[in-house]
Length: 71
Image 1 (cartoon, rainbow, N blue to C red):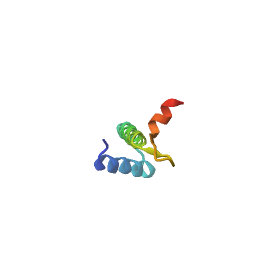
Image 2: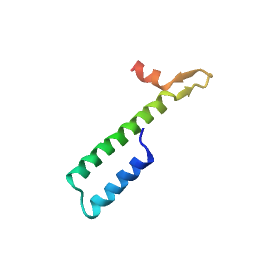
Image 3: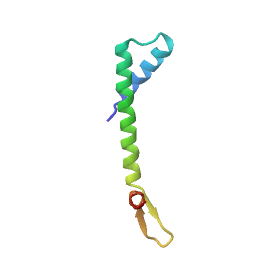
Image 4: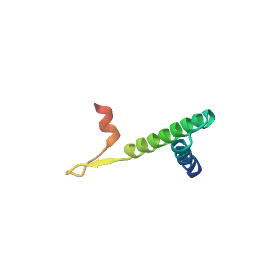
């Protein structure tokens, strides 16, 4: 899980990168934080998709993830 402090740090490093540049350690930290953010975003999206249900006109319900597995 990504915390607000980590998001703030990502933004701080992005601003610093645009203004004065980053040291090698800061570049590595930025890379790690960005990867963690992207991984958390993907996990959240997959969870949301897994919990999505299609309701057919006849009232039947089908999980979106089930539809994906059939293809």
